[in-house]
Length: 287
Image 1 (cartoon, rainbow, N blue to C red):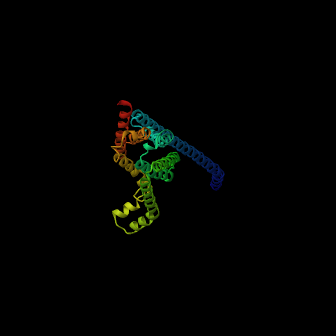
Image 2 (cartoon, rainbow, N blue to C red; image 1 turned 60 degrees about the vertical axis):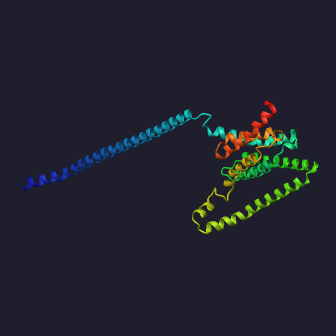
Image 3 (tube, helix red, strand yellow; image 1 turned 180 degrees about the vertical axis):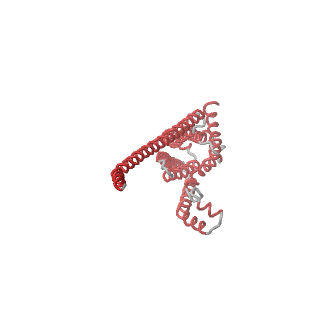
């Protein structure tokens, strides 16, 4: 019996390593299978996510393209802001061109000193505005700088013409008005920042908010558009100006400018300028 037990114990001992190796081999194979399964699982999920993202991107791109096409169908020359803006800019150059044309071809009698002075202020403000606005509009700035030079030349011609015809009193009056305007402008430029700072720091509620506004009354962004009212005012003040002293070139340019920029201010400019233009055309070509 003892011999049999010893024999069985030896056989069990000799078989144990084989069983352990079989178990380890089985466990290793199972782990490899699990690892391969997880790899395939995460690979499939990654592909699904990529496909979903691609579909969403394609869908968004298609929607944007469709919206752009629909918008293009709705846009015509009548409601195209880019077209009207370009046309208005060309009309702005027309004011400079009209002054240059009149200087070369027309008598100084056609020069309106009221309108010439207003256009000097108007183009000076818009030249500054076009230079400081972001992004800069150097083309517009060049247009108004040109107009400042052209109007200064017209002012010179008018003054010389009056002096040659013995109207020294009128010349003195012109110079006094020009000096007062220049002094007022300098005072606004130099004193404006101090007044603005005082109002802002006073904490006056609505008044302080207006004073601190980026396009408020202490900035050129406010005064450049407002100066168009000055053009309309100068035009309204001369509604009875003799037609032989109306510049066809100047009022054509002003009428077109008012038409292309038809906001509330420019409607007034368009109406007043068109009145003078219509009278001039009637007197020179239809009567």
